[in-house]
Amino acid sequence: MKLLQYLLLLAPLTVALRLDRRGKVVYDGYKIFRVAPGSDVAAFEAQLESLEAIDLTHNHGHVEEEHFDVAVPPENLPAFEALNLPSQVLTEDLGADIALEGELAEYPELDMSAAALPSLSWFNAYHAYADHLTFLRDIQSSFSSNSELITAGKSFEGRDIQGIHLWGSGGKGSKPAVYFHGNVHAREWISSKVVEYLTYQLVVNYNNDTTVKGFLDKYDFYILPVVNPDGFLYTQTTNRLWRKNRQTRSGTTAVGTDVNRNWPYKWDGEGSSTSPGSGDTPENTGIRTLGDQLAAGRGIKLYIDWHSYGQYILTPYGYSCSAVAANQAKQDSLARNVATAIAKPYGTRFTTGPTCATLYATAGGSNDYVTDINKAEYGWAIELRDTGRNGFTLPANQILPTGTEAWEGMKYLFANM
Image 1: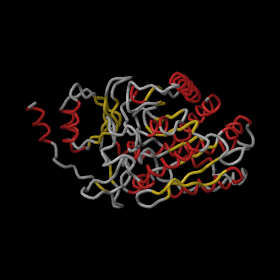
Image 2: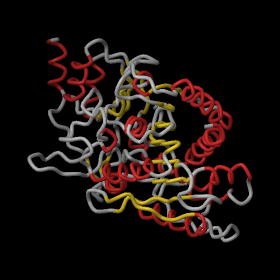
Image 3: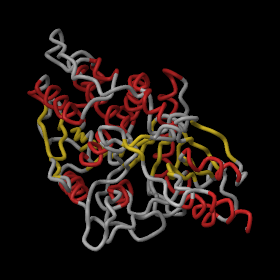
Image 4: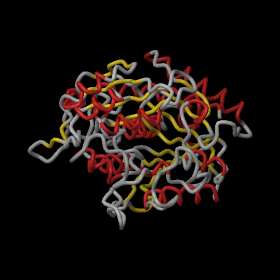
């Protein structure tokens, strides 16, 4: 223990985040490790804090060995490596990985050969937040008889939480709801792109694929690609790894609340947010209110909260590892078959199972609320590519493959749920 304390003292007490000339946080030289914490997790977490390491994700070891993925700043790499913890290097240089995502691209011209749809090249690059709003407007205009733009309240900084509602031949609001969220966690850029890709496929194929037409004729789709617009914009302008919203509170200089651990159901257990109260973020209020309205109408058939990373299909419950959904056997079967469908294009393997028993406790999570309060038949969270090599900074050339395999999974799910 004395050696450990000595090593930690060698590390700088505070690692100031480095900024480029635009005021954006620079992660050049940060190294990402997958670390086995040992039996004393609390002591390990204290070590990370002393080293100013960024805790990216924590797998609690229900399915595989417990591990943390952590980004260690270059100033503290010698002290970290001297700890001699069981670990593997996932990324040699986080800054280089962020660069591989590419610059935010210009909004592509519309595809005038296909009812003025957004171009498929939208999915070749990441784009500015304002362009995501343009994408929604353009895809709605191309499908104007069967869609409308919707909002689910406002963010803390006053931005509309925007989305799209799609329907089929039964007319607006006539069928049970499929309700999708993307980018609740700001740094998970691939989630909004995949949600948009699913939207694109539903719209472009409605009039030329009887199977897809059947999906929209059977369900109303309510799709919100970016439910944390303040945080998402902040990742594009200031700090690529920001996770939470941008909420400030009196009595503290801390900024941000995890919108996804803020649902007012089983909120105060392991894995909940440390914010003052459940449901107290404006983003949560907005998306929850929309879900409550859908539940009170035709009901919610399917809810999916889209995330990255890890390649998981997670069913209820997160608040308890022993709680079991009434239709758990059906959910398990569907999830396994969706994973099989996802694997068909590129062989990408997803792990399936209840959230707590498969990954970790997530008290105050969205899918538990939607399952038990909104009585959704299926309330899932899906963690997209990859398993840690690129993590949150998935290269742009993986956007389209990630969307393609997710669409294969959703086609199976829509047809069999």
